[in-house]
Length: 218
Image (cartoon, rainbow, N blue to C red; front, side, top):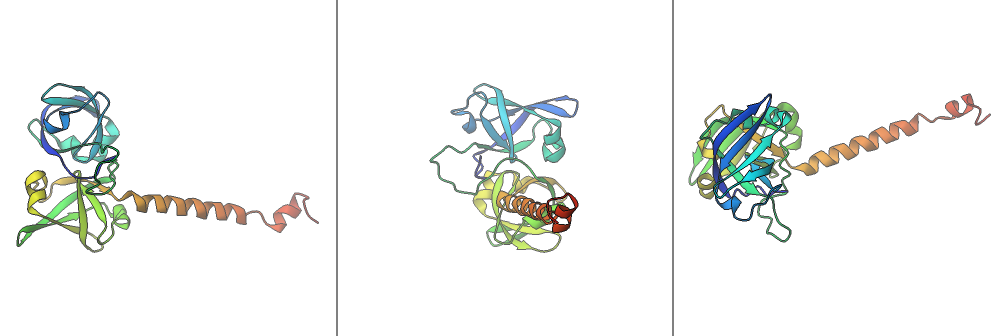
């Protein structure tokens, strides 16, 4: 579990592809201070497992499904990535609850400067719009941000100078893909409501006519 508060920017040292998956080595420093084999590190918002590390880098394996769902498939040697260690029990939750399981990628459509902040307009896949709410939280390339504008096709976030300087968001170009993870609460509610609806429909199938047909009532 993560918070969407990026700890440092890492750099891709090597990529070894195997079929549709890949093994990636990333240069880092801060996230390696207390790292152990099997630890999770969010990389551009994607939860990945450390399977090898030294003082200056760590290696992760990325399965084909993750490559298809995220912008990790577009990484090249030298690419900069947002990094965050899994949150420890008792730590401050400065952003919001982030699973590191990407929903899909969105497309950056526009930048607009306003005083000391920058507005970023993102177009997500249409099916994600139902999970995005005004003033709700969303994770963009591993960064916890607040939805400040929303219409039927796009949403906007406002990036303050600290976020601009400590993440890779402002290095993206218009048209680039970014990883999106919507707030998980909405997805759980949708799933539970769907199960309740299915359960009610099944109960409606047990009618007096059905019981009479099978000899339970006359």
